[in-house]
Amino acid sequence: MSDITIALDAGHGGSDPGATYNGRAEKDDTLRLTRAVGKILEMNGINVYYVRDNDEYETPFKKATDANNSGADYFISIHRNSSEKNNQYSGIESLVYKDSGIRHTLAKNINKELADAGFEDLGITERPNLVVLKRTQMPAVLVEVGFINSDTDNKIFDENFNEIARAIADGILETVYSQTTKTDAPGTGSSPDIPANYSMPASPGISENPGMPACRCDEEGTKLYRIQTGAYRNKENADRMLDSLLIEGFPAFIISDDGYYKVQVGAFLYLTNAIKMEQRLRRFRYNTYIVYD
Image (cartoon, rainbow, N blue to C red; front, side, top):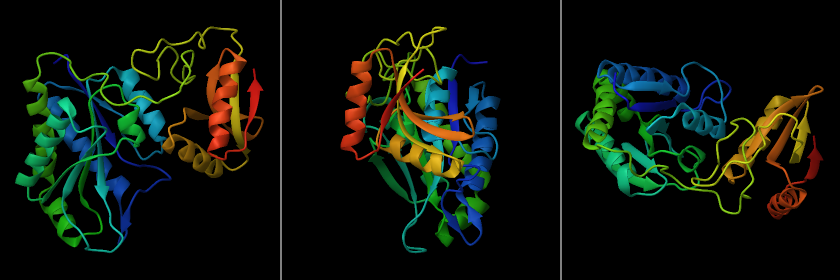
């Protein structure tokens, strides 16, 4: 096997169907296609880490964290696009944090192969606020494989499914084989103003910003300050709050405690850093208070 690992993410999942059209759900198309792409990569000697391999919901931040922890060299998230009006647009598109370096090469290669499989190529778009592009620590691309509310694109997707899977895999393989060393990684963005002693509790020892040292938050017996933005009996309400925080770039997570789903941000050794984060959250009009445990 190769020493290269590709993290493949099937967009959406579980309670989040993604875009839908005439009974068709994005989460089903992406899972089927991701599995097909993964099999081709594995047949070519590439290690594959499936960020989502079943019908379950994970937050975008959790997906990025899992991919980082897997040690993957590249991250590809597979989605299907949608538009306000049915049959308004058609074509494929790749999204990147910044259109440069290996990210650009990977997106360009995938787009070219998908165009050969029958889709119109809509190009590469920078989307620096997407969590799975911003928080991943390797070159990352989100591929929109046609519009799910386009009859033209759905026909291509269904009739040329094997060619589409091969196209994405070939675009990845072409990029991998053109690189002899890891460059452009950590490969996305970093979140401004996160204190230097911050570490995400769900992934101890992983620093949120490239080059930023992890704190001692994972040491047994260490008490931490966290900022709580809500406590809910209903998990869907907690998930909505979590998604709002993650979209705005906050390192948020959910803990289950005493029958409540508590949405919290950060894990700080020092109260002063927790206060700074709370002030940022309040500028975004979140109701907050600091907890200590």
